[in-house]
Image (cartoon, rainbow, N blue to C red):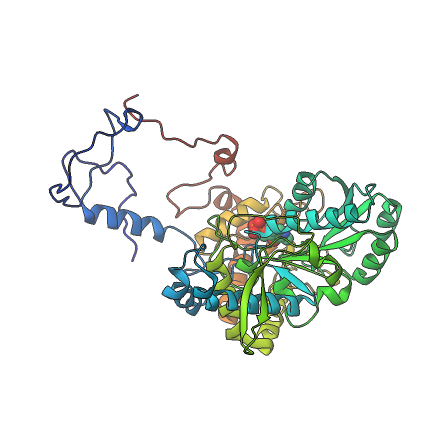
Length: 490
Ligand SMILES: *Cc1c(COP(=O)(O)O)cnc(C)c1O
């Protein structure tokens, strides 16, 4: 049972100690003046105070190891513990990135295999494991598209077409790469509006950037036609692969018509994420773009005595490095382990169950929570509902999400897709790792909340009731960054 004592942060007592520092057995050394501080009010605490404080803080977290975490577009699946065992093997964890090649053959063999698995799963030809996150993968892919056009002497292509349902990182990455973003509207079924697409197609199109399934949780019904139209005017098609959890072993972006995609390994292939990293966003491309990939990439070479060795390789027209060293290697080990653990059939089951679970929720909830696109269609791995409950006009999506915390669930994604597309959006992604019992408890809670919204809306407005802090300003910390601590006695 959790402690019922209030959470107190000021626990310091002058003179209290948590560790015993032995007498110094080395000569004293005068610190440089800029490192010296007269008053450094470090907290003074015993070990037990520190242990309890942080353990209690961790218990306040609605984490995926504690409860269902249906945060749409984030794929908060259970992270198998065997991944952690593999990533902690000293042969992986204790390597130095500058070690001689012959001493790290096992590690780069793993990277080589992972490159091949990711190419196979996406139906692509070549992969770079460098990018450190999904957004950096996007930026990488866009730089590759630009480099390809530039290498052909085609300098007119300055436009990136992006559906209005795209993740916010898509227009941001395109703008960072110096492109002009053109927003494409969606049609009533949640697909890209083909007429709007046609209207923007000309020789200034660098490419189209699209997520499939899109952020309404819907499969783009005309995706092959969309790819064909973009290719017809010489543009390339970029796939934001963050939603690959819906497609593993079922559909390959490369066969559908995509030229470049990035993966979110930390989402689809299970690394704990959500606190800001580390992530991994490998980029996979068709053969005609392989020379532009950021290196170093691993390749296999045959030695004279018939052995296979693995070595680094910089593609001839590479856009360069995206980061120091070789990507977030620990995440690569976890993704590799996850893929080997599941195998081809297992990965297909992952996606089938992810889609089944989302549809189960959609079917159980849509009579209370409108499903603008799900009314007439099955969803993929996530369902986009609306926090608009009949008979409860004052209740909004945020109230529903906060009340869900009282029932012990992490809230779904709120207000994404954007309110202009889906007012009061609740994007729910259960993932494949939730059991039917948990899905039922979640749906039961959502249905009870809908009833509460009609009978006692003030209960929702005042929620969460069991959290130590109530409604936080979720953006202030990002908008008013304070990166250094202000000492109390200043
Ligand atoms: C999560 C996500 C991203 C960004 O990935 P990061 O690893 O957080 O940078 C991009 N697109 C979509 C659709 C996503 O869900």
